[in-house]
Image (tube, rainbow, N blue to C red; front, side, top):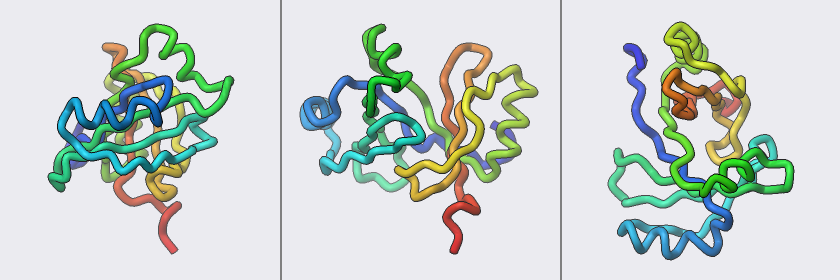
Length: 144
């Protein structure tokens, strides 16, 4: 991350069923889960967030496939688990430019995310094959 003041927003963990996994997962790591599950048709996923309550602390996102076409099925077939790290960035355009120059592969161009009120996200594989999600701190998609 450049001088973009990027910070870790959340870590995504793929599960077969959020409803079945959420309560035990939250208890096992000592955080809260409010039970809200958000469907994002553009991502073909359902997501839910677990939080420690400490304001600047990154959240943990549970993600599950929303339908049979979801690419998450392949990931879950390999056992699931840690799926991605999400960074919140000032400029998605600048971050994608930086990622490409560092050898990253943009696998999903910017699109609005339901879970973040329409703020733009994009997905990048780093050279080291780490899946990164970038969330724009403030997107035009959410401004009145």
